[in-house]
Length: 164
Image 1 (cartoon, helix red, strand yellow):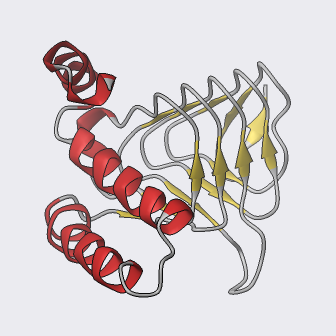
Image 2 (cartoon, helix red, strand yellow):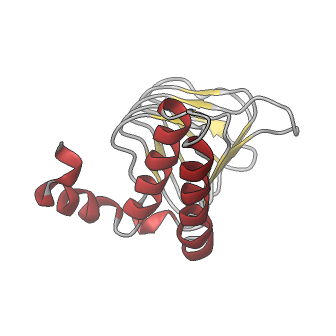
């Protein structure tokens, strides 16, 4: 399994630093949630995950990456993912880069969350809210507040975000 390769871990560490801890803990919780729903084992394993999440992801990184969230391969969290909040309803594609202090969530309590397609870049402090789609290869500028769809290979900047 490539996750246990030292070379693999060094490569991921160069990209995300200690954000690899947040990603790894999320992946553990998502695996337990998706694959290990056995009545006796699930409560123990999910409690272990929640303890790690509380101490490291929420406590150390001040982040929330909920285990039901669907996140593709090769998520990058430069600066360790400090302050990143991702809704459990969000869908994130492959090769997405999310800088610190980013929120990806709903507008209403029971609302829908964004779908972020592959190869998207999200700058520091951006807020992506509501049932919107961020197209493949799009770029979201730092501190942008995005509440409308962003087409593929376009850039959204500003408050409220305008597509360039």
